[in-house]
Length: 269
Image (cartoon, rainbow, N blue to C red; front, side, top):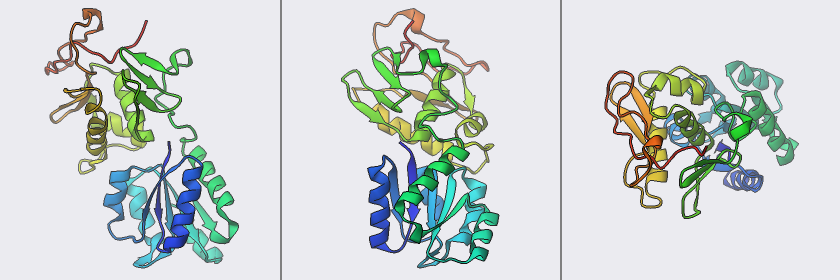
């Protein structure tokens, strides 16, 4: 499910837009001011950011260059202003599209879909999908990673829904199971940008994945372990009595111990 951040200070219109987008399968988070938007977007990790041009605390267009530096999400400016100059300024600042509110919600959702296609997120899971022969669902022992629906299914049949980027992150780590993957590799694969030292996007996403999955089905050990100062490694879910053929090395390539035996997450033959 694609995630959208909507910044709109007209509450009635914001609710109308959010409900319309949600009825078409999008997850929408709303906000009515620009202040603090960077931290908010860092937490939500949206695929699309929709900004009302003029909100109560300023011109949203002025925030676009800063957002573009930090985030790879598509940016759409939504406005009742018909000025072509404003449209040009918004696009020059880094917006992907500039939509007139008078055009209606059907055009807005068409523009959202178009931007998603342009930025390579037209499908819920993109670059890190497995080859078509194992596309979906991928059975991983007692668990299933369904790449079509972008969900994880527990042994009890419970669907665990991650955000698009969280699922993409997990699939990328899963494809490198037992290897230490650096934050820079993760940032390029999932966020579409090199890792910056002060960027907490990757760490926050890993934390959310852990919180979402590890409390389900009696899971007591982390599925993703951190390697201090290096990155993360996918170790699966620890269980009892599993065959050794599903175990991976106890060490990363640089000799760091990760204790990754007895995996529940595994591929079927």
